[in-house]
Length: 247
Ligand code: ADP
Image (cartoon, rainbow, N blue to C red; front, side, top):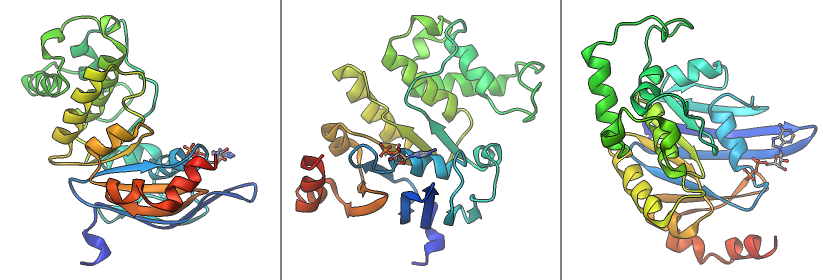
């Protein structure tokens, strides 16, 4: 297969901050429908990789092709519109709005600043909100205030606010941090449902959760890939054990 078959092809990606290479000649391919988990000690460059893909940080060298479009030259908002969704660690839902309203304002319309203020609440939008609410297990609370949700449910709502934009690639930074055991299990199922027709990249520290969701694990260390593969292979790799114990 040629490299154009991948949803995401990151090649020889480097970013230097004052001469320090936070990401160093990184090459990474993500398949359609894949859940890829990126692990590695603090400072390994995990967050920077996601920042580079979503255009928040600009690379020094290398390319990022998503559906064969080069992202390194595109604006952050153009990258979102091309189908890349990114969720940060802390949930940022509107706590004074309902679940429905949070989803509704995230629905892409017109793509102009005022678009979300002046629009017709048509059936398509309503159905889409209901469909997403069901997926994130909040259908019964659709018209309740988002301020009443648990921390975990707020994280799901934020995922829903990305799903409503129909991303083909979803990137999540530690999605189960601070969640209860039950919420973690539900999140694992949610991510599997999401990946049925999308690719997902997750940064995660919880190895049990990694084992539950990962199709493939990439271990980063000092901006480079230490090893890559199935979780069972990766977690017993002496190189991986060494970088974790050495820190
Ligand atoms: P991780 O997510 O794996 O913990 P990060 O990607 O946050 O690692 O950081 C990798 C390295 O790059 C760290 O040493 C961090 O201090 C450095 N770094 C990240 N962003 C910047 C920046 N904007 N300016 C300078 N250094 C940065």
